[in-house]
Image (cartoon, rainbow, N blue to C red; front, top):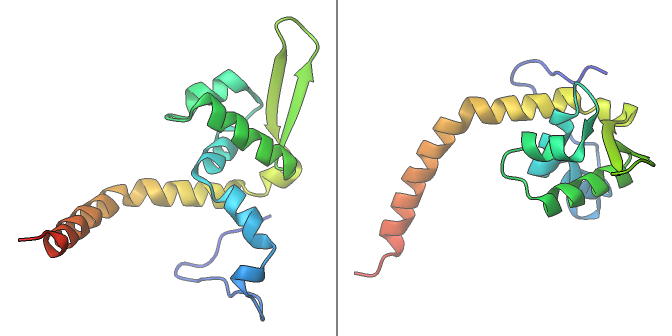
Length: 137
């Protein structure tokens, strides 16, 4: 499924769209979460074990990875396979539904990496301006 849009094109929201009442909001909260984006990206090329994902996703805690994987599994985006061996082995892979997100996730991560310096600069300028405005004299 091709998800790319012409440069500068923003998809229109469906007629009658009300974000507060939209069931899609819950799904967007899951897949739009920073950790979900990285998990989906890390599983793009192959199945991985829990510790591989933890090692490859900088800054994620064991608990947050567990919570993220469970949510993605519940939504049908990630598949979990447990093997009855000692020690237990668990593999994670993207489902066909999860694979449909790869272009979108890739675009978002690429966009963030391309603009990180620009955003950090504008954040610093904003923080300086706000700090000056709110600092008692």
